[in-house]
Amino acid sequence: MLKTSYRGKVREFIVKVSDDEFHTDFGIIDLSVLLEKSPGDSVTSHMGQEFTLQRPRMPDFFNHAKRTGAPMMPKDIGTVIAYTGLNKDDAVLDAGTGSGILAMYLGSIAKHVLSYEVREDFVDVAKQNVLNAGLDNVEIRCGNIVDEISSIEDSFDVVTLDTQDSKDVIPHVRKVLNPGGFLVTYSPFFEQTKDIRKAIDVAGFYDVRTMEFSEREISFSERGTRPATSRVGHTGFITIARV
Ligand SMILES: C[S@@+](CC[C@H](N)C(=O)[O-])C[C@H]1O[C@@H](n2cnc3c(N)ncnc32)[C@H](O)[C@@H]1O
Image 1: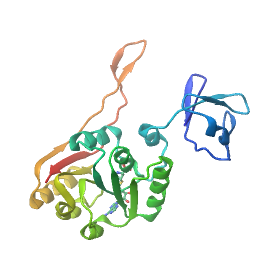
Image 2: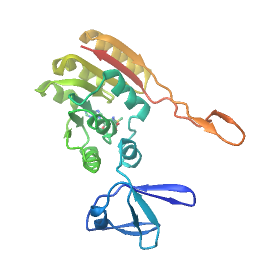
Image 3: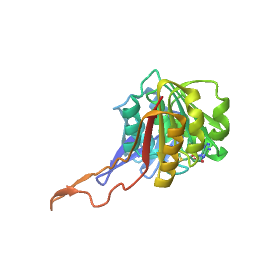
């Protein structure tokens, strides 16, 4: 990632080492010179603007990845990771992939993530995002998880569902979850969430909890310090259940 400052504002660009040139408003950078550079080093554009090299982290991919729809927000992703205790030995089944934001965050921690997306055009974007993030443990398959789940042979430690039809997937989740594994669903509406809870009750999970998490940034100015007036509003309800 290349970072520079212009008129007091930070500008970031995610780039890859290649023989290409990278064109910015602040001049052209020869990307081949990055091969001999390390994080913290700097490069200068043909216009004399200095850029610092940084290794991109997941929040950078959250900000810069191409989006096909609304990704899960960091506050909710953090919740999924914390409440499931996701770790480096875990295998995760995820659907729908969308832009792949959740799948990428999970893949940056877990052993393997298999993610299903029904739309082929979304799969292409998500695969490119995963490639850009350098994650070789995130596998994206095109398919409808409702149809596919019953033929999945592997087992998983965590299953994450962020689709409108999650309730139709839930009856098949026990079969693919390892003992003690977690099911997590993400649903924006109460109606969807109630359907999910009913399906979870029928399927016989335990420790079932539905939660909503809010985020409140604090603004600092000459006039005073207070919660920011613009804020992240409702995103989705997270339901977590265990086998
Ligand atoms: C809200 S987005 C998921 C966002 C994703 N979690 C992220 O963080 O980027 C929901 C995605 O699910 C896909 N989808 C909907 N129903 C599906 C199904 N039955 N099987 C697979 N994907 C599905 C949609 O095409 C859409 O891309």
